[in-house]
Length: 204
Image (cartoon, rainbow, N blue to C red; front, side):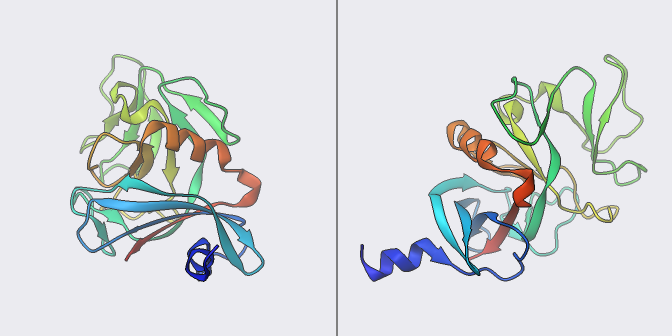
């Protein structure tokens, strides 16, 4: 193995202390196509164990000033939400898994007190929140499986963006990160809650 190959497979990333699993997503400014890799901790640095894979970003690329509806994917380092979701049955993830049913929404209304959260409304009823809120159970194949990227969550700030997911790819997204289904399922099965996994979205 050449020195260049070894260096490409081992890296150090600031702000990742306390975690032993890392997903990196890197793209040039304004690009909608990114490079995604999976990393396991190796001492104080990281060893790449899968990838690089091609991922898709929001239609306006990565942004350090994400706002609701701007089509951007928020740059930064984030945890994953405690629950993974999907229209399809659990593919074998280690996180808690919720199979979507009629009435499962993500509240994307900045005026709502439950902005940027999963909400269940009785099937057939209109939700009390508006904006671009998504009927999750209807969005296929994107939401056959997805993990929540814990952006704008602690605390939630109205208008800073919502529903940032890692989901099945069908092209540029509205601000999420997406992968082909086979690679996404491999990633979701690999993540372990006890490893305190992170996702790092960075401009190359």
